[in-house]
Image (cartoon, rainbow, N blue to C red; front, side, top):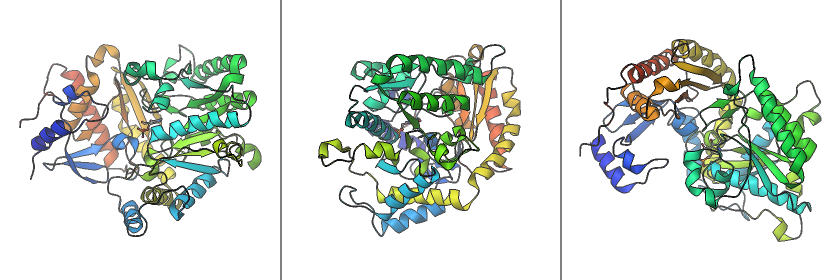
Length: 465
Ligand SMILES: Cc1ncc(COP(=O)(O)O)c(C=O)c1O
């Protein structure tokens, strides 16, 4: 058996890990994982870890889920991949059809890619090109939210507001308008989340009133700004944004890469902003113009992303002139294995009451987390669907909080990575009566370790070999 230390040594000698200062990685060596089962990951020495962040928010039904695995294996023996220009295949077609049906037909076409950031690039380009095709070539600008995150390729980074990811590359990026985040944590005394949302909306309205003729689209993470630290906002923000976009003829891009696939309690987070008690036709007009999906859609098995767009957007590209088409492509666009994995994910949603079960199980975890959420050193406890978060007050967090908490979590069988001083849980949809109290107790023990023994530096254990 190769030891953890040996894998760590080889990994550091050969890999450039993502989102990692590699000099620091020597002090916080990567965990060598050899096996996954349900919510558990097992390292090379057999130690288990609960995957409290669903491996960067991708894993929905646990690791090595048998049904998703079986679908991929079946596809593997049939048609693993074929290019999607000039060819088509059942998994891509069925996936596009079933996702469109989940929007009541409002978003009728799917364009595939592999990673989330690529889907964001596609949505931005599609919006830009749509206006150009319609003779509105001045509509070239984009609006994004403070604290927003949409990925790290250049276009996506240009509409991202996370300093540590963005600053070094700022001179390379297109300029975008940044408007206030509706983050409910900004509520002053006596204010509600809806008040914060209304303030943020007023800012968008003022911007649109001034320059909507130059603005192609606004991009938003509906309900939860993930990478900002699980910043949650009132649903009224999304409703008002939709109304403004319609009024001023600006596209609304809902980036559901992190929040889609049931994470916020509905399959699409955007569903929560739809009007009720209206006709189907009216409801269809309340969807975003674009939805980007990735991460959970393939269950954490294979890279897949896609952009859903309305028929109106799609129609603007139809012409005998090739150059008016959307000529974007990636070699693995619509990969059949990944699409089959996604179909298996949708089967789960169709055949089991995934959302109802999550809603019930979420109550259990919320109750179990009460001692943590009520800890006086903690502020802004919050939940949206299957996302729990709290902030450790600045005066208690101390330096390097996220890393210290992560390392303490390892000792308590948790794979957990706070963002700044925000601790969050985004577990796979496998919580039950036994796991929830266990998870909450481990979070509490980890917090106690970090806050009660801030000087106990058991963290920096470089690889021994
Ligand atoms: C909202 C959102 N958009 C885009 C992305 C980028 O996705 P990827 O990392 O697959 O490029 C992420 C990743 O965390 C995300 O949370």
